Length: 409
Ligand code: ATP
Ligand code: MG
Image (cartoon, rainbow, N blue to C red):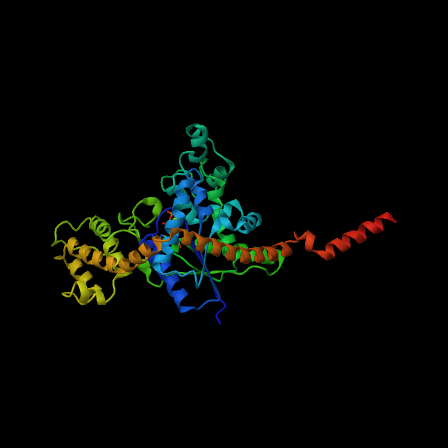
């Protein structure tokens, strides 16, 4: 039997979209159905979602069920794998606390995903966290904290494209340190394989460093994970419908898995293409053209026979677009049909699961119980390795008893 332990998760900050699907969900279902693993865990990262939505817990609460329904509708099966909710496993927080000792502030500051996400969320500029609570955001902007100072001395390392410090005074510690919490999520289950999109690469690298440091200090305990990226390069980081580098719930540029066929068509029709392709006869560009990137991610040979028989392949379609003479509307209609064919069975399954919502919560609770047992067992190993298992360490108690006995005489 395979010794692989698979683990992945998603933040309950919105319904899941087609970027999640091609970047991670589709691969997860393939792995699940191939049964090539010892154990497989998929979790809803609510604690992580709270690091940047701490002031909006209702958003997180509402989206737990949405993400769970998305999981079930793409074909993840709780009879085969364990689906759980992150915050229900307190061991994950405990592990993260100890891992914090093994990571420097400077190392976290070098994480490119964290940097871009901080900027995207507006934590870099104004004092979002404190400003909201105390109304002092603008006053604090000019204050340079030690972290910023260190950045400045390192040149532009801690600065964004606009040369503003990335690690501004509004950055919550929880958000800044979420890669450490992610390392706890992965290692608590001794995961060997993490199927994820490209943005997760720096997180896995960080996790591997933590594992190595932990094992070198405390002895072989944790397992090093590997990221499993989609083999199709268009799926590594699917752009948004607006042409922005990443489709992301937080950017509002998504096509959701649960959207109706009409909504999908409308969004596809409004998609970013090639701004230089003004009239049909102009030569068009493929690179950076979101419609073609989506075709690269979703189009299969059979789609031409079904929806666009005048072309034999995607290469032929691209060549025509590049030559000129092929309009955006035609390729958008083709893409809309392909997406809806892929999404239709997902929507249908979702409707079925929506009929028994309490059962979906029940499934999450059962999964969380099982996940907790596994994480607790790793936590026992960690406590033993770190010598913080005082009450079960019979040898320690005997030694101390002996030491004090000798002191008396
Ligand atoms: P948020 O904006 O709240 O961060 P998100 O849309 O980025 O949400 P996550 O929950 O952070 O989604 O990501 C979950 C998983 O989906 C990760 O493995 C991530 O790599 C993958 N993923 C997310 N967006 C994309 C995308 N546009 N293309 C490919 N994979 C993606
Ligand atoms: Mg994200």
